[in-house]
Amino acid sequence: MTQTSPAQLTLGDKTITLPVSKGTLGPDVLDIRKLYAETDAFTYDPGFTSTASCESKITFIDGDAGVLLHRGYPIGQLAEKSSFLEVCYLLLHGELPQAAEYEQFETTITRHTMLHEQFDRFFSGFRRDAHPMAVMTGAVGALSAFYHDSLDIHDLRQREISAHRLIAKMPTIAARAFKYSVGQPFVHPLNKLSYTENFLRMCFAVPAEEYVVNPVVAKAMDRIFILHADHEQNASTSTVRLAGSSGANPFACIAAGIACLWGPSHGGANEEALNMLKEIGTPERVKEFVAGVKDRKYRLMGFGHRVYKNYDPRATVMKQSADEVLAAVGDPNDPLFQVAKELEQVALSDDFFISRKLYPNVDFYSGITLSAMGFPTTMFTVLFALARTVGWIAQWKEMIEDPSQKIGRPRQLYTGATQRDYVPISSRG
Ligand code: ACO
Image 1 (tube, rainbow, N blue to C red):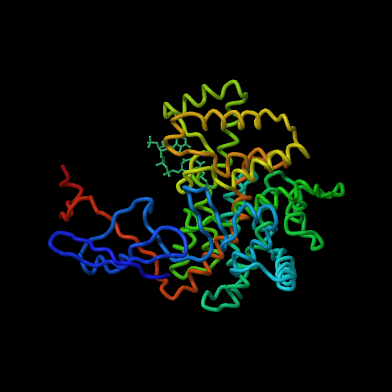
Image 2: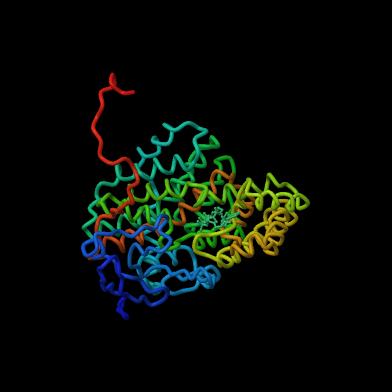
């Protein structure tokens, strides 16, 4: 970070100088760390719309231009040319791996995919109809009860082992959450398969017959994982950082991130988006539905984004994947895909959406794709959590390794009662 001309702030009869820092890309930031000490005032920014909570070198988004870079590489290039595991390495280490580094990383992740045998008994404590995100939140938090030897957050090697364990075990946990909900036996990982093929097999193989991975589906799944791998300081990542700022162990922090991701304004939107398309049912009903959105009866799920005020670059890739998967294993004339395309077209030409800069986000087409692959809607956010784990853990590591890191402790604008005396219950009017 470099310094540029400072800003002057006048509050009452006091004028103070605020340092202004420049990143490599994106807006400058006003450094207000001494504001309270020097002026006795806080800043007020609900939803953190104008607040940079940390310095980071991992991911950059230019929401107006529709740009997403991981360690400088555009998401479109990574989705087209890379693999999810390579993106994991990139996010964790800052650079694309050399061939030998990649081989070692892939071996390490592959060798960590199994779960402690006792862990499998944990799943049977849940009701069969439990939402798989509820199972994920509990199961990932429980990892800290099984892997005590990588919980020391001050030890670099232990932090690395935890990161590898999380990336490796998440597909196994996610597949078990799915298998448990459909009443099928758990499928153990198979090391000769790639990360994504292995995950698909753990989800869809049954003991009664051989499972052959469809390469189109595996490629699309891998791409979906790449598209969801990280997204700078979004709600769940900020949750992971905040939980981690107190020194909590990485498994507990990722469980907190999963809980946050579950919400319909965040990761839960892909589930809601597909439910919405089903509710609309046919392209002919799109106009009526859009009228309801404009009357503020409901929101158009899979549309709009806190940061992107342009087409989400991930949505472009996602739409292409939806096309490929439907052609390979679904129905290219799938009525829901037709509804989605009609809805996108109607919304993008309507002033309500244009004036508010509302464009499709990554979730708009992901549900259709995942559904064609055979996943129920309840699994959509689980897949998002699986992919985002690397982003969360890379951001968590960056925070722990940042010398300026402090426990996160926001302030507030208090508007409640002023001090008053306790009144016994018998005397309350
Ligand atoms: N449908 C209809 N109107 C919308 C939508 C939408 N999806 N999103 C925003 N708006 C409108 C709001 O009503 C508001 O209009 P107004 O100014 O006339 O009151 C304006 O656009 C701004 O909306 P905000 O809620 O202030 O925007 P914010 O940046 O806080 O919200 C959010 C972003 C939560 C993602 C929102 O666009 C939304 O709810 N979208 C639907 C859910 C969704 O798809 N979430 C996925 C996000 S991507 C992800 O997590 C991977």
